[in-house]
Length: 225
Ligand code: E4P
Image 1: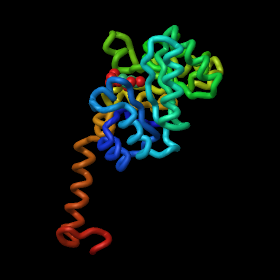
Image 2 (image 1 turned 120 degrees about the horizontal axis):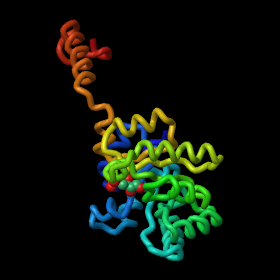
Image 3 (image 1 turned 45 degrees about the vertical axis):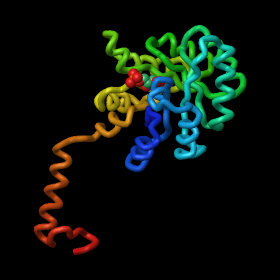
Image 4 (image 1 turned 135 degrees about the vertical axis):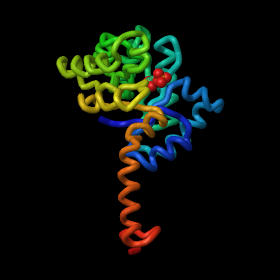
């Protein structure tokens, strides 16, 4: 499973990249709005930091296909080849996805709440479909189950599209999808930081340090004893 960061704060992205294995960055209009800056200014900073090879996902906001396609061209022009254009999985979006696929522009179908959206997006040539786990849970359905169903649906129909699960609130949600072998997930920095936060782990490591320093002296380690 590829693991991406769902955020646009360059400092947070840099920190997460420094400590964790990350495959790319996803954004959405709400995430960009939080910065109060020009979207391309922020996105270019992110692209410069993550490099040309990493995936960057950027959403189009037009209501009609023609506008989405125009946005896709500008997004790719500004941010490079490895930029996936997020297109909402609804009627106008499907029209745009087909046209973009024909042009060879990679698409991430977004705002996915139902498997049928993902199926149609995949048939239109989307590279990813992004079900919103937590938002689906909040509607009284099971977000994890929806993501698993979409994964199965792709496999059973020989569709190359992968699930890019989004909208996580905790590590258990991510773990379940990781165990299931879905293609990719994107998580906010705070969720990433919480993935392995565990008092038992911290305490075990602290005990080892204490015992070692008891043997060799305070501040000593294997390179200085
Ligand atoms: C993904 O495509 C969405 O932009 C995003 O992950 C939604 O996350 P949220 O429900 O935490 O806002």
